[in-house]
Length: 238
Image (cartoon, rainbow, N blue to C red):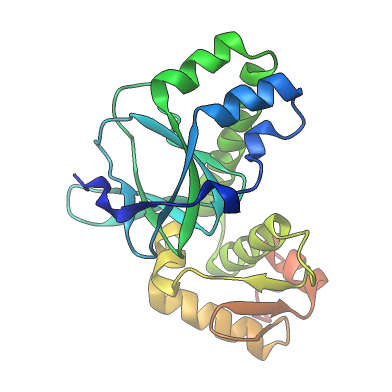
């Protein structure tokens, strides 16, 4: 199991209002903020590992983490990527069901599990908010099942880029998508090989659908065609 030494305390003064508090009444928001502490994890470090005691719940304040499980033969399946505003560590049992590792430097708000659970009973509207989070997680899991089971490589890559774009919809340019994870991470999320990911991205670039802006940014040049590709169109062209 990973030690929690990968985490560092962050000055509370620099921390904005937790997303869990937004939209809630002042008293409820104060109670939520009162049980939180702000911490950070460096890129490449684990926040927690599969099987660790599920003692805390975390809210991402900034940065991105990947969530994954290891198969008995050592292969890795990335279950998802979480970023600003997302919760992780909501486990029904006593242990975390997956490993959470920072893709970039990450800032988090940490809630101790016992005190977090008490808020469900004590704070009006809190349980409903958690139900929304669980519903979003279920929808994401269903979307990934579709990606892994029925879509081609082109459809998977196109869908993945559009998913990232939708999550960054409030960015200055919604068509410039930040892709901080490596090609191997994308492959392990989509059930492809790294070579297939690279080859498919190259095909999309050669068709003028996307354009590399930097090592971590991709511009969606022809979003309509990318959406058609995600839906199964233009397979022969790409």
